[in-house]
Length: 174
Image (tube, rainbow, N blue to C red; front, side, top):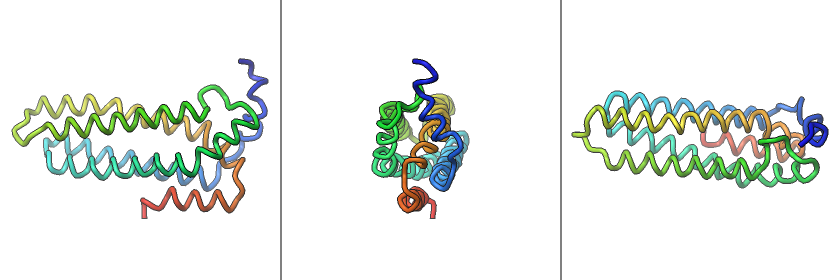
């Protein structure tokens, strides 16, 4: 695909970064911090705290994904219908990443559920190693949304819809 094919999308979205993008970034920072707290509990081999902190992280991530699919995806599709998104910026790719994130949440939850207070330090280390995939996926997903998705969604949305969506994205942080 040529750069010219994507130029309308890029030109329209390149300079947009407002309240909706900022709200998404705030949620992503909160997710990173929650996952870090959880991973510290895993490093301490504190199973009860690790389970609790993971449940908090997973709830926040699931809610954020649900909010994005409800509030952001329709506008993302509309922006893509006007001009094809840049490579890696399609709604389908974001959907697949959301599915991967959900699968990783389920996998970590299963692994945590299978552990006991008697689990070895090596078991906790193996969990941390496996969670690195989740850390990397979240980082990659955040970059995709920040660079390719949210600026164009903001450009497509009316100001009032943008502000309502930003408030709803931030709601779990209150």
